[in-house]
Length: 237
Image (cartoon, rainbow, N blue to C red):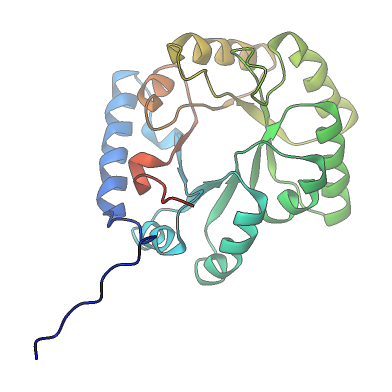
């Protein structure tokens, strides 16, 4: 009798060549940086692994990639201890909205937190850094599109939050982050974030995703958050 391969499970994601996708994105980053007169080496590609199984992350790690992004605290805590045990050089960026009661866990596992957007959260993160003796980089998220459903400090309130974070809490604030409205041209939002960062002497800009990272690079992005272009569509939950 001929051997018959088992049928795939209904929740198995389709095959994705993660290494090839990473190479393609890297080539696009090089081209966009060159067009902008920038050094591609100053741009960190954060492969957004939220919702993807560990085997896809392992494929990226095996291909040499080391910077990843998650936006759910519990998912990151479920997936990453085993991955980091095998790949200790991996850096994890927390890029989702963060509740104050999750600050302890975010400080414990993240190498960078791209989600500081209000005083209460900044104080919780500061407290946990002091308690745990860890100081992940912090990005302040700015709601450049004034979207009520989206996290981020309004641009007009940024000055006060930066002052609190730097002067009172002494958080390691390295830059700003934004997610433009899906329906808008992202370039003006990226330009605004760059202007705000320059005003505060912040060198790092976390902006740009799969659909718009080339525009973000042209506007000075130092960190781009790319998920679908690397890992393919997220499997259904």
